Image (tube, rainbow, N blue to C red; front, side, top):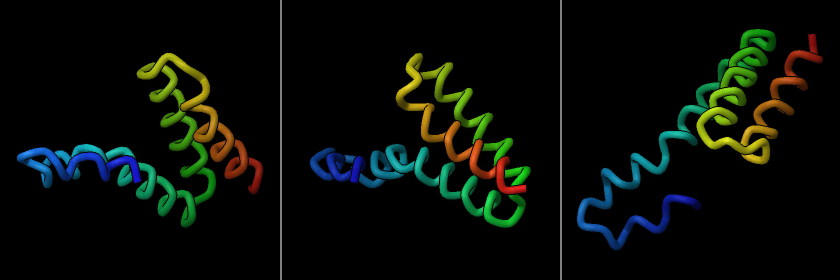
Length: 75
């Protein structure tokens, strides 16, 4: 959804890939967390810290922290 604005650009395929990198990383983290809950919880926590440092706002990082908490709470 967030990557649909790139089709007007000359190199739209490269721009599409660049816009989808965060989604691909979070999808990978979800697959890891599904298999190993504790490792996935820690990885989501690290992703939340990275987003907090990179974007300087809690609103973007809060979903990653919530997912991390839920995976760590499971076991």
